Image (cartoon, rainbow, N blue to C red; front, side, top):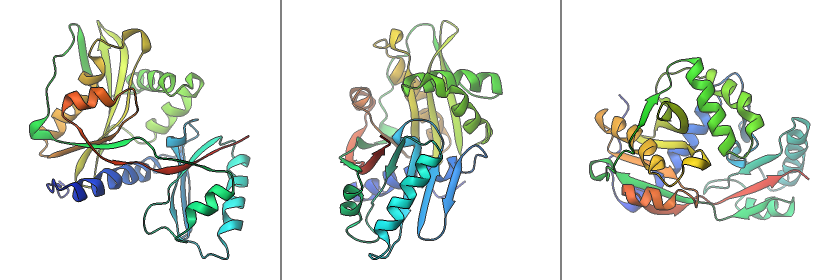
Length: 268
């Protein structure tokens, strides 16, 4: 088992909220369906799913004299690959120090991002499970197709279900990543993903079909993977919230510790 993170200081939690995210992106890049570039100066990971959070520039180490040309050529490359949305991260340590200004000058938009949140898994609020609702982890390709179909729909891109399926199929069903499907009266209606990285349990791909929202399904499909991570010995759960999920995560006991600020590029 990897080292378990147990530093509950705000600074420590901010660090693992971000570290788990970037380890998650790196892991997605291991799928044969992902497109990855790394040359020591620039690293990006593309999944082809039309969401800025599924296509990311995660490392930038450039000299001031070359940054403009590299940014322009990288965006040209993304267009040639039919990528329409990308997040470009400019975390502390990125070079040049004024990377954000160069990104803005090349048409990217700054976003303060969603809340980065964490919870002590020993203090997780275990909310009631709706009647008729069960959560199972994905163990075969048939279940994975259901997962991909629901997740793609909730990305706002139902046509990307096959892309999402191929991405996840290329990673298999073993930890550190585990996908979950939630069933209401036997019908698949929700998804979640558990990723174990940076010593914490990260939650991703939480989604509930619109016609069954408001029933407590979102909290249930989130808390089950966290309970399983706690049984494995993990002490901290983290996630990155959308506006829709913020209240759900607060009820589970999550607290906001940072904002996931980044730059977004969208093709014309």
